Image 1 (cartoon, rainbow, N blue to C red):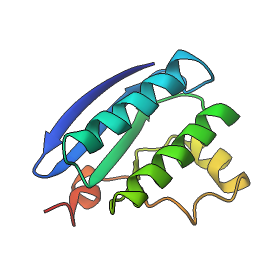
Image 2: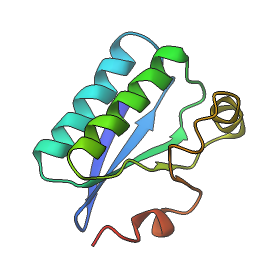
Image 3: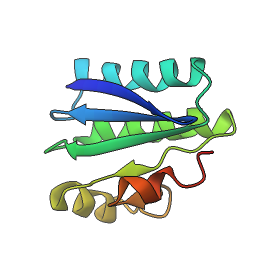
Length: 112
């Protein structure tokens, strides 16, 4: 998985590309979230537009990132879920935890 980080105002957007599975991908996500927090971001958006698949370890890392950001007083919304990933989050009953957006501008609201 490749992760590109963009800054929009006080918000960091992590553009993820590739499957989020156990190994280098989950480590990359963990490192990207922690780096964004070190840079002072209180809201970090995970853009999952180019993530075709997430396994249980990927879900675990997303939850870990969410908890880490929340413990710092921030938020970790998800952006651009494909149908497969959305269905997975429904089955895992995680839609009540994450804020989900299909529009980047709406996800950025509240960042300032």
